[in-house]
Length: 308
Image (tube, rainbow, N blue to C red; front, side, top):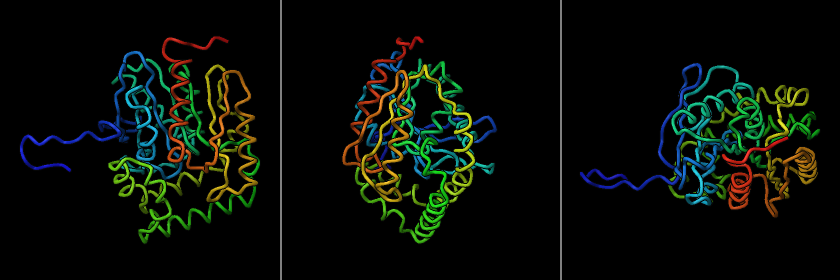
């Protein structure tokens, strides 16, 4: 707790030191940087969350690193402590914001290379940003990502389920009950990140941002299907859950994982199953994700470049 007495020391936040980065149109993105033991030689790990999730969602994964590598978590516009955005929140717009953050981090921390980690809808955001700054990316870890190879995403039933889920989430947020649906997620986080997520992650404003991103979802997926951004010279690990969860039936889980296997079947690709785990892999299996990030750093870090 912050004390008012002169000389009182404030414990550092588990997710690091706070700052902001500018976007190309003048908005500010809130981020937290946690140093590693050798920031000048190791890759900087940057995390991208899924729909409506703030930076706090990654705290359990960060904790697994100890000080192995520096990490950055941030809030997309309209989430957490970042400024809102009045423009349509399509995938290209989201990826541009991530690119702007990477450019800022390169200048501020002289980051040699990045490892980008994205969960759910954060997976496509990471893929598009990676294509834009491929010369700075050591590799990517996509955690149960949304994948346009999955035909189920294009069905009328899938679109109806997304609309229903959004209406329910918005209604629960308005009455302050949405956090109750995520008790297990919150429990997995360090106390300070848990308090931040409880205060910032389940608000009506966050649900409006979620709705704005969902409004572009189908068109974004169709564009990815027509012209995916992926570069085959960049290492990727795809982590799949193996269990049904809220909004994902056993049938859909099988279709999603088949799409993940197809995407990982490429040079420098790897497919990993998070056993006995639903979609919320970052809070259910944080150690598995951290291990895959470390593997990317060790194999493809700043001084190891893929050839061919």
